Image (cartoon, rainbow, N blue to C red; front, side):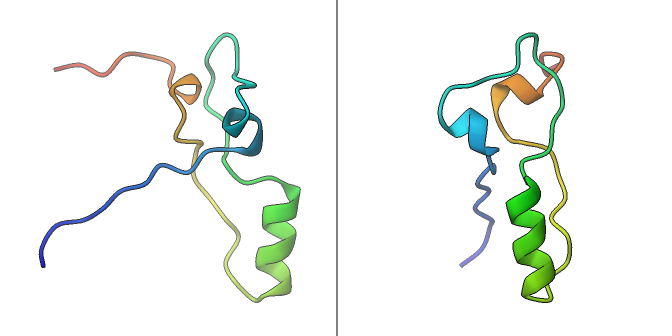
Length: 61
């Protein structure tokens, strides 16, 4: 098998339709995600939310 499956991770508010207006970059992880990572000896979660509202510009072709 070759290739990759990419699944954007959404922050909790975006999962329930509470989007940033206007769009602004924001992390997907919240305090609970960071606390869980620390409690289970995992690295701190990083990265921006994968939602459309985390993008500030349309991609260029």
